[in-house]
Length: 271
Image 1: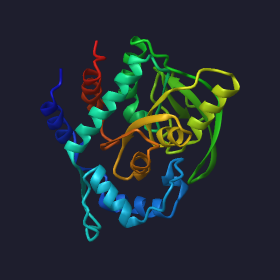
Image 2: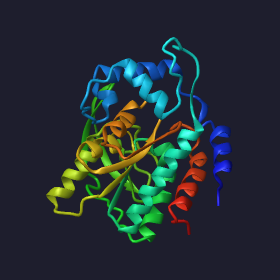
Image 3: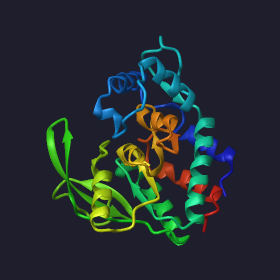
């Protein structure tokens, strides 16, 4: 069993929280783009109110612990580990609730190279608790805009976790999926489930567009978010995202293992 103190130490040592790799310049650029309602950073969210750059900086300081000083425009930024721990506890409560009612769940990630193992561990535990881990729209094509134009990707599932792959890139069971912020994959998954009259998820767990896209459609959604992903925290502030956990989403995959063990223990789902 991983104690809160041990996890706090791990967050700092792995740079999941504390001083993180995402630079201040990247954060501020994302906040500017979000304020301008650029679809690349909205992640499928349609905010109820106008969020200016000052509003976003204040929100992200509150939710993540980044510097609230508008004159801090370059160099490192940070995440408060206490905020990460509090959000992980809230995340665990949502997992426990889903397990208690045996709710159907959907997992999806735009960071398969980093976060697949984290989500797969949760999927295994919820499945063992009697939850249906849904896998609709396997193999469906999704056209998504990239900086190189519109590309076609294919939906796939690895250990119960949805991701998208470029055509021809298929190593069975691997995390060779594409990095994406798009909400189009989760929309495609839900559309296919409706067409096929399949069970819809009561909870979506993931990151980027998987969380914001599901939350915008009224499905309970929880996930992980870096300091340059304000959409999840705006969604949480506006009630569309149930829990957004602030952490660096680009560190080594094995560094997320202790987080999975922690939330499963807090949710009483450890085996």
